[in-house]
Image (cartoon, rainbow, N blue to C red; front, side, top):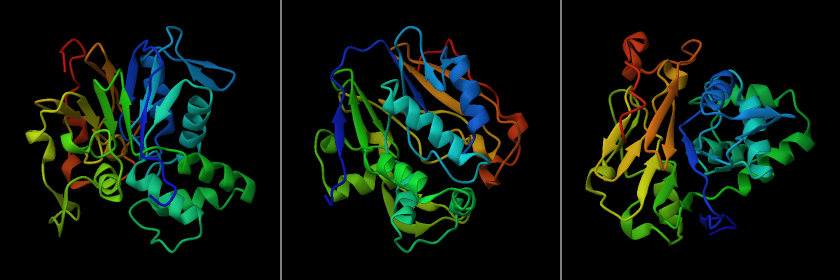
Length: 267
């Protein structure tokens, strides 16, 4: 596995989880959403008074204006025990960049690299160590809740391999590219009926996408959509709007017309 962490099963008693979709450098929106969810900033660390834990779906950086601030928020929350985080494909690419591996600074990485140019080697090493420690999926509440950036198949749960890691980061890709420039992916979630309810992101949609036993909460905040959180075990959604559209995506041509979710509807 090249030293990468695979699955982490959280066995501590649960006071509730708030799974947060792809942030992509939208720090103001993240702080806003954490406030909506009831987290308080205590000496620079967001803490929930009821002991709930935030769970980040990965893709913390790129495209948005404040990737380093997002990293600081998430690193402090995870290191203090107030959050968990899984690795996303953008985080993986940033990790390879910080290691000095050859990567193309495109698809949003160029915005993060520009921010890192103002930092020193010690800070870069701190971020690299954080990213290296992230698992590519989480099992929560005795496996009843499964969190993976791009999803996971039933037969993969509880196992580790390079193929599972690739699926968790990129989804069920075909190798083809769609007209809008995004990779073609099979819709694995429509056929998922595993015991654990899977919360994932990676593929942005203007609306939350519900499946038989999974939900995609990447609602494209950085593209003018929403930043969404899935509250567990309440099975409710919370959302905030972005200050502006930071990057363009043809799927979000009219972000102002995207309707908010009804938080009282069970998901």
